[in-house]
Length: 420
Image 1 (cartoon, rainbow, N blue to C red):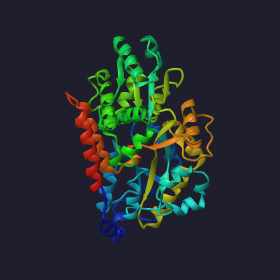
Image 2 (cartoon, rainbow, N blue to C red):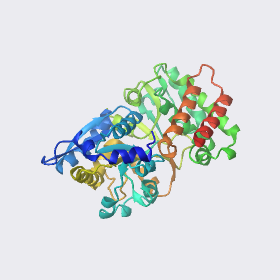
Image 3 (spheres, one colour):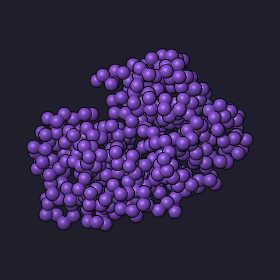
Image 4 (cartoon, rainbow, N blue to C red):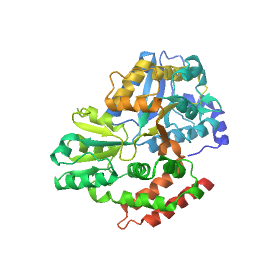
């Protein structure tokens, strides 16, 4: 997905074509601003509506291009840039891919808005460090998600006489009881990123955050204890008998619905799933429980979404981009969007009074010095992330999963991508 500098400079050499093919004349009263994003699920769409309404109230016409799946949305954005028809705004993740977009000229920095609106005084320092490239903000931050949550349906767990698990052995015990109660013990969407999400919880929960970062963030292969890595795959395989046959290819939203409708007992996913449960009418603490997975106490697996400005020269589009940034970062929009999305605001000065207990505790953890660990979307570049997901998915979906083979495959995949 990397663009060469020649590609970027070629794009910028013909700004009139890029703008004219996507937007009407500058004389139009309201500037049209196309936004490519991947928030198309019901709860996500409702949250995004808070931003859209705020942008349009400020005189900009929002042109919505929603794409199913984050990788598909990112690919569309880059393809549109290479084709000379970039959107005004494109969604991305805060992480290791972001600096390349800026340095290759695909996007422009947002430092002018950040300076004027004093972002340094309201954003967590750890997030500032991830957002800045060569000292300038590369994009507009939106939210901070906790990527490691264990959800459970309260009624289903009670009827199965299953206790909330405190260890991964407890997860197996609870799953056995749930299976005997004729419900799906563990709801899992059979897509590589969802399978790897559950695997990462086990790595952190059994081997610790230091080991997780050593392998999947810092990639210190010479120091990796391969016996421990193999054990993570063995522990992961213990859960497979408790996943239903409908898992392969199932989306995370459909999987969340299994918890919402009482057809499953446990669900391991990021806190963005709360948005779907909220939309289904469920209330945290009454209908479902949300807590950190076993062994993940004190660890916040961070996922941060961001919006980038395409590097267009049209002054009307550039002005509309800045309107977008100010609307997105305004305290009322931050409060409303993140409350519906299931995430926490990036601004530390936003009231959490209307937020649920999970979100308040997540905010306290992030702001109070919890161990913030980059998720796969933040800690790895796209090619490496895909390779890691492929190893995990191949292991999970094998008729005869081999932890030793998966360990070798993982070490090889990381080493191969680091050399590329």
